[in-house]
Image (cartoon, rainbow, N blue to C red; front, side):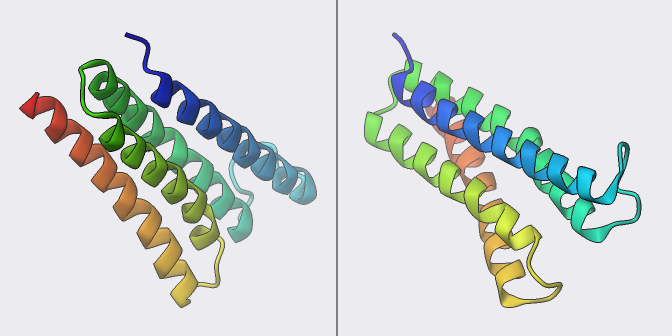
Length: 129
């Protein structure tokens, strides 16, 4: 069985990752920083947004893809993937919000909590399968 839903959302998430990478590269060019963040807070936040994506999304897609191939109902798979996509869109907006602002806590926190929940739910679904 081909994991069509995971492939579709994986493609969208791949495009989002490239967009995040370009976002980091533009800040690097503006600050003339080739390695690290050069002490620029905005660049560090962009770097961490991209890195956080790279740390969590592959595992989430792997677990969800295995769940899809393993026969978990498509409604569950679609819900997990949509939640993951929306969480990963929200997270960078929270990361770049003003320190201590409601937007920072709301979007960054929501992005991370939903990402963790998606991974946990997918893992539990696999264990119960």
